Image (cartoon, rainbow, N blue to C red; front, side, top):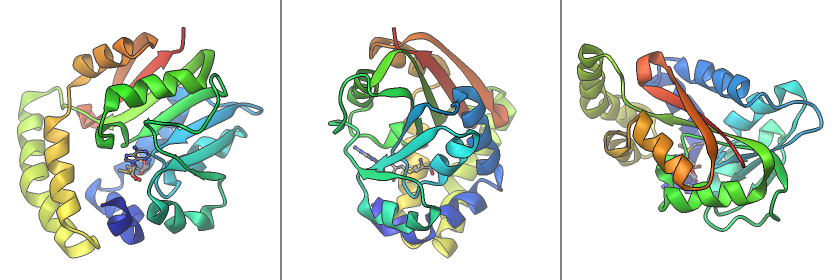
Length: 213
Ligand SMILES: C[S@@+](CC[C@H](N)C(=O)[O-])C[C@H]1O[C@@H](n2cnc3c(N)ncnc32)[C@H](O)[C@@H]1O
């Protein structure tokens, strides 16, 4: 599916999010706070659009994804890239200072197994940030957003995306995804400690942060 949307992925995201995606990526970098000399894994990085933002402060950031189509579409960005399955990462234990995943955890066949793999490759004391769609906290806004997701979003995607069905999946997968506290519980159950979160854009997106014990 991601190979099929790769060509216009970045443009479609910016249109569907009304340009908010840039702010969400900046907030993710600030939450992870990657510094010079650090090794950072950006998992399910797709075209590397999340990775370039993370690398802005001088950390070495690796974009890993299992869709070769997505990686190819982002080759012009010049970030280091690896073809890798999030459920069986080809990296040694404790080989990264920080791991992050933006709009990817929801797409893993087994998110709990992915979270455990991320813990395995992170050094003790290392950080995790999950940037993912979540649940708006103010009921009237949640209602409007629910309508946008199920009606407007697929309609816009039909005009812009190279694979509109993928955006019907997007809307359905967001609705089925656990809310902020439920995701925090899953992250802790996968071996992470000090789990906390913060909402972006009224809870359309949440940033969950945790530490590897
Ligand atoms: C919505 S895109 C997110 C891309 C990018 N992180 C961003 O912020 O725009 C989700 C990505 O998850 C990847 N993905 C899904 N399952 C995966 C897995 N098991 N291993 C690696 N990547 C996976 C897909 O190939 C896709 O590129």
